[in-house]
Length: 266
Image (tube, rainbow, N blue to C red):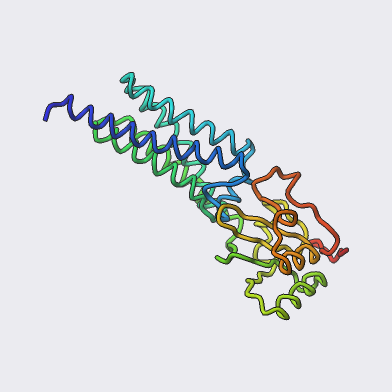
């Protein structure tokens, strides 16, 4: 098989993988505008909350990167492709290292994008484009720098569709717990001390809080009246709050809650 034929096959593979990444990133951006996401794990929420820039901007940068790589591939700009992949790997080392060693949770969408860049780099290595190895070295270096950081939290929320976060000294929490036991509802209960860092990250300062995992989003209720009302009627449109909305719109606290770090209740 001729060299040109091999080159064309690698180019096709490179463009195919880049297109998959482009479609994945565009899909996530569209879902973000619809207040949803491809990834609804705890790691995804923590990663999004940790960003200084809006998550939509970061996703848009990813879309631009994949688009540029496809264009450069058609133009045979080999050196520019290698340079971009090297820079991308440095940034991925920052993002992945922060999630693994600082958050102690993984954003599956971020890891999927990282895996796509790994595949792209692998196609370059098969073509003996050794500059990409510099990108791998950069990734490993930045990634390992985060290993000296203490994780934000060693605990994660259990894998349950509905989770009640409570505190023993909170009368409103006790009210909800009594209701759950009386109704025989199967709801996982977690003491606030085991997930306080997670709550602070997403700006929750009051309890009881009911976390609801739906198919395409995670929602939360705050206050005994809201929670009991939801459990009675299962009406989520007016009572639930989407974690992918703007922070100022997340937690409209009605009466029937206590603050996390004090005995103040109302």
